Length: 285
Image (cartoon, one colour):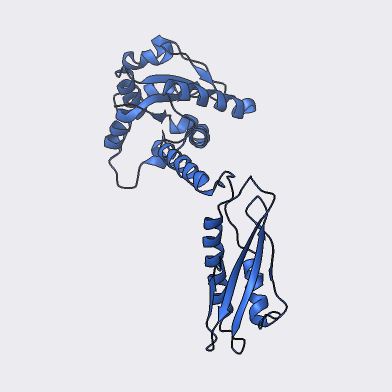
């Protein structure tokens, strides 16, 4: 099992404030993988069991050492010293790195001043966190932990999400990419403009009292966008009517595939309105 969590070991009477600040600052840099008993053990949980479980999943244990840290071992005598239990178990695991973290100006005690089962702590390279250089020193410690535990700067859960977003973006980009210019396709152009005309007429409603046929001339530029559209006759029964103006206005947004073999493309379609006011578009070629 890969150990990627950080366990903060400290004495409350010695470094409770500094340990809490350190755990919070490391959590901001490393994410929710930093364990500290006060904030991480729920009310009612068995303290020793939770500590044992957490140490079993941690790859690094920070022994926060202040000026009164060493005296705590003697103060407990033969009683239960949780700091001693934590560090003893951590030192027994080959896959766990134990890092002495010196705060409040403390220095490492001599091996002879510690119980034999935790003397290994002072043989580890220590890191000092100074009050006047706190942010820089914590950032340095975070970099050490990131390298030791082989942590990515990107949260694990974001990796598959990022891959999915990249894939979706690629698909969207392909779908939204405009088609490459090609020779003008008159058949496809008529198909699209007839569809656009029918959609426009449907949106403009019933053309009552203007029965008849009118030719409509459409002109496109090489990008496939409309340049102009107009009724190509002076006697069109609905030229200038609300219905006719509505249809032309909507047809101005029609597009066809881009082309590269002519300077512009012209199409002529017919719009027919029967006696009941129902309109339709057709090609008269």
